[in-house]
Length: 197
Image 1 (cartoon, one colour):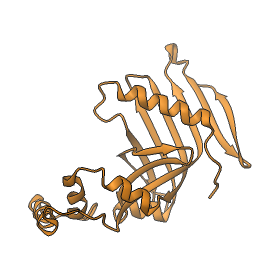
Image 2 (cartoon, rainbow, N blue to C red; image 1 turned 30 degrees about the horizontal axis):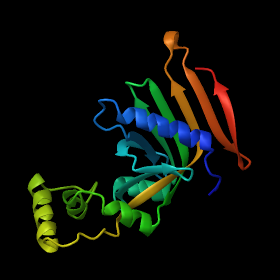
Image 3 (tube, rainbow, N blue to C red; image 1 turned 120 degrees about the vertical axis):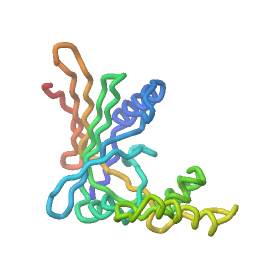
Image 4 (cartoon, rainbow, N blue to C red; image 1 turned 60 degrees about the vertical axis):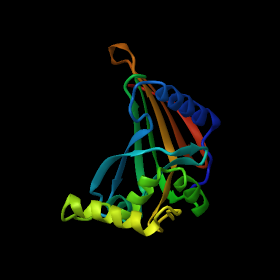
């Protein structure tokens, strides 16, 4: 996998967009559409929450045994699309995935609400579930197992970093004359281009 850091211009522009989005009335300003595909190229997309980003890439967390986790192993190329309607801005990221370190995953895990940590133990994400009661029973069992003590991070739950090879910024404009700017990793360097809308 290519290890060329994102340009600081890209990181700062994205950071400013995230800060602006956080000041809107959006219920989840870090929500992003994650598109994956399996080994046969069948696509799938869903919303996840961005939990970190820097010059290395964009991080979300998930159950690695879920359908999403299996697709990430089978075909480690993904796309992320952020869209903030109040800002009239969109960012698309394409790249390869890599696991975050255990230290990163552990550090994020302890920031999650206790109930969310218990939920990660209770859910067999993407597997068929006999009834809602089954999930609630598994949650209660996890709560009983850990009592008032620390809830450890399951080995199957961790973070995934999208290491970009392309980032595109899109800004809405009148008459559909939108503003598009792409950054593409080519031969070990980032190339900036203006695109027609």
